[in-house]
Length: 250
Image (cartoon, rainbow, N blue to C red):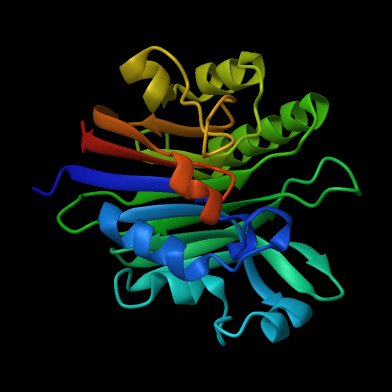
């Protein structure tokens, strides 16, 4: 039975570097391919932008999610969260296994900030039950994040069987850990870095990580290996590091 799963989570900063200085999507795709992850959780994926598509010559015709998935991840899903005159961006999930269904849920806590969660049900080869994968990008303020985590928890309790394998990953913007801990306890989750290394991963800024903003929560898995992919080279890639985990299904 194929019980080992390799996953990654990455905020791609809309495919551009700080202050929109450089188009980084091709570099990001190369880095993600080298990680050989089965499932990739992505945040700030920009599917459409009128100005950038004109400004950057190598801008993908069919959107960033499809460009990143390309020939490596046969299935992908995109959830539109933030819409503006020039285009829109949101969360995406790339999968080497078939995505049976995907649901994008608005979890915005304030009109000034559009946030969402993308829930995908995935059919993993030889598994007797579907994998539930949830990609999230939470708000900048603690009050909003607390409200959003409540929304995510309520959604999962209603739509994900308690016995099903579950992964929730993304940019939690969680400077502290208190709301995340309440969230994890409520849903019987473990955060992979906290569980394996004693602390959440430092992931921001990617070139010299100081803040622990990104998370990978699991249920129904053992943690085999975790890694933070960061360093000076990320100045040309994104302001967030890439987090990866190798998981064994229980």
